[in-house]
Length: 149
Image (cartoon, helix red, strand yellow):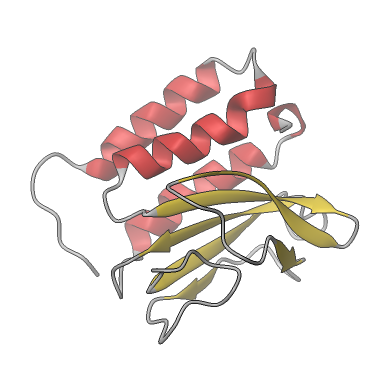
């Protein structure tokens, strides 16, 4: 896990997400704003994307942090448990080019997975318990019906 000095980026991210949640009057840009807030507040998040369910696949809808990965489709998760890879020998086509760690957090719950939040980092071992709590909260918000893309 990466150790950071200075202000707590997770507290800043939680505050930014709470502010977005309070302004849900514009749901069309909520997912894009959420991805941008996570990317801007947590320094180890080099890329943040939201994949929305289209048929039986997840398709990249919005992202922050540079170019989209080559592969813009993901398989639909079979559960709501986060999928973490903290040591990528080389990034898969579904991740940004410089990713060395990534986490996929499904949104919508076990029976109704409606999307997934994918966060990539250039730092191996970047994701730990604080990340999981923050990203699960964000994915839960994205999985609610009024958080449409």
